Image (spheres, rainbow, N blue to C red):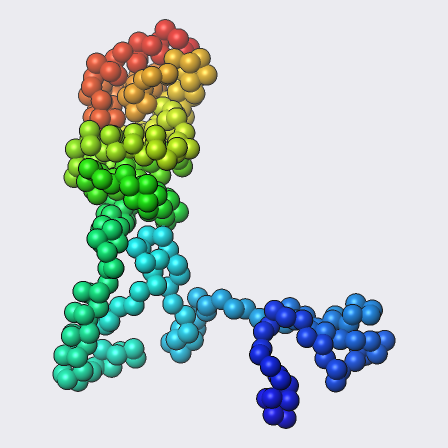
Length: 308
C-alpha cells in the first residue's frame, strides 16, 4: 500500500484520526487513534496502546543509538546549550582526518568563534555564566543551585544591574544569593575568596540583587553552620549533636538575632566540646568560622547565661 493511501495530507501524531477500514471487534463501532492509544468511540474499548516518545534518547547501549540525541537545554550557557562545537583532529566516529580537512576545520572554527556572540551583552553574559559555573564547581554546589545562580545572573543583566559593577562581583553575588535562597551554609567571604573579589564588592552586589530582584532569601541561623564547622574541626557526633541542640535552644529564645551565625555556631561547638571533655581551643573554633576569639568568648558567655 502506498504512503499516500494512508496519509492523504500531513501527519500529526497528536491529532485524532478516524480509521474507516477498521471496526471495533466488540461492537463494530467507530475506531479512532491518536498518539497514545486506539480506542472505540462507542464502547470505549482500548484496542491498541503505544505512546510515541518524542524526547531524545539519553540512554544508549551502543554508539549508534547516540546519533540522534544531544545535550539538554541548560541555563548555565549563554545560548542554552544549543550551539555546536567543531572538533579537532577526528571525525564523529573517532577516525583521523586528513591534513586538508584539518586546515579547513581550523578556518571554520575561527569563523565560528568570531560570530559566536551577536552583541557585547551576549559576550558579557557568556563570561558571567562561565564565572558562575567555576564558582559553583569550586564550592561543590549542586547542579540545581548552579542553574539558579545562572538564572539570577541573567535576571541581573536583564534589569541592567551590571552597569557600573564588575561581572565577577555580580557572578559571585548570584552564587551567594542562590545559596541563601536554598538555605546553604555559605558565607560571603567563602564566595569572595573563590571569586578573587573583595568581600565588600560582593556584599554590595548582593544587596543590589536582593533589593532590585526581591530574592526569597532565608535568614541564616547558627544551627545551619554547626555540621559544616564540626566537619572541619573533626568533632565527634556527640559534640556535634550537643552543639546543634545548643544552637536550636538559643534560636528559640531569640538570642541569635543580629549575631554572626558562623561565630555563634563556633561558640556552640566550643561549649559542647568543653562539656564532653574535649579541649577545643577558642582559636581553633574561631579560625574555621572566620571570626575572632573575642566573638567566640562573647557568644559562649551568652550561651552560659541564656541556655542551659
